[in-house]
Image (cartoon, rainbow, N blue to C red; front, side):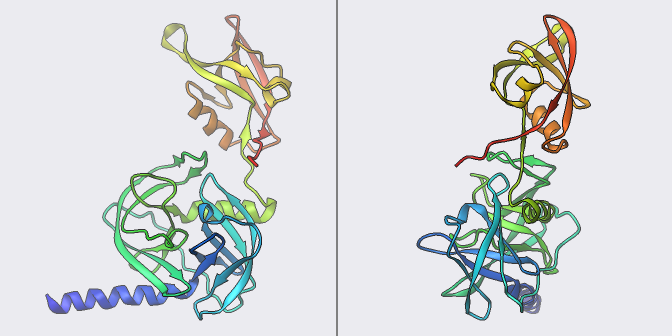
Length: 293
């Protein structure tokens, strides 16, 4: 038993040693730092909720030196912030291509300027499909972690026993436990931010409420309408009932969000409405949801 424990201990230490040189400390908020990971050459990712300023951001590298970084953009919905860096000697973390499973052993690796790399061990406690956060973003998978996330751990990399990243850690998206923001979600956010500087989310400019229809069908009645919003410009009226958006029936607001996920901002999406009991079709040009200042 002692030999088996020693072997496990050495294996875990080897995983930390394999991944630690991709992990930095990010100084973008008062009092204490968070963690970040070199995701691509010249591109760092961290947890958006830990970035409290847009300028004078620095990162502490594995060799203990500090280097400036610039904020390329951030997405509060998925809690991902993207930083650009001139760190030439860094090696991007290896990414995992297989889905994690409940019970898989994982390590969360962070870094602080004072203590260097730090690691916590636990398991993946739950995994499910696509999940919308309370901030309005969509994670490709819900990955709940059963491990300790210290104040500076958010933004650090979560790796499996092969040292491959399944995502980055965050304590801001769930009150139950820490989560891993999946690697596929991070890739999607990084791609759009590097091109556009932001994540554009579609909206229709309507206030909707579920309503019962004959034959046990459901729809969404328009209770409010933004005067110059996308739906108003398409001719939608208060009292109209949405029954289909895109190619799918809609019976709650989550259905609308899912439909908008597949239609880029600026493109038209078809809608079937009931107006005075008569079916009508309109095409709405999806607008970009205004960003909160």
